[in-house]
Length: 141
Image 1 (cartoon, rainbow, N blue to C red):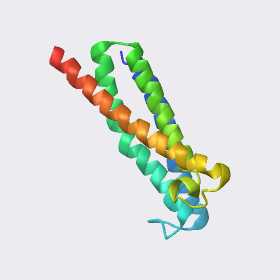
Image 2 (cartoon, rainbow, N blue to C red):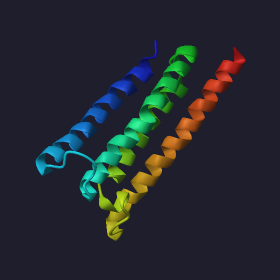
Image 3 (tube, rainbow, N blue to C red):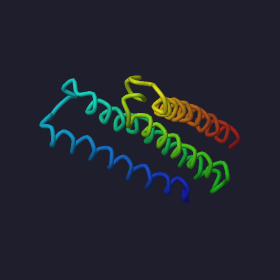
Image 4 (cartoon, helix red, strand yellow):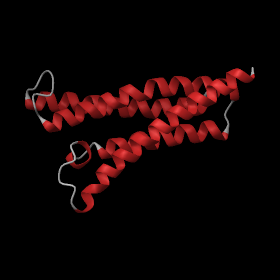
């Protein structure tokens, strides 16, 4: 059973639902039913939600396939945990205009940009790594 992937999936769907609620709630409060209406805050919330939607589903499917083949290994555990951390870092980066729109990067606000960059970079590295691991596992069958 893909236990580690299951935990990660549960975490990701909770975060994804919170992000969707963030977009919907903001739309409702500000009467902006479609698009981003040139609203930077809404655009940032939409991208946070969309970015999670773009990366999480395919990653979790491939990780689950790998875990089904290899079992609950340390590799699967770390791949799941690091992906969750990467996605949280990306969300932190996108919670400020410094991270999303590169505005006002003075002082500690650069941390938002670094969180976004590290989260995005780690997501890409892990995605490539799990793809390669799955190919190598399939090839060894």
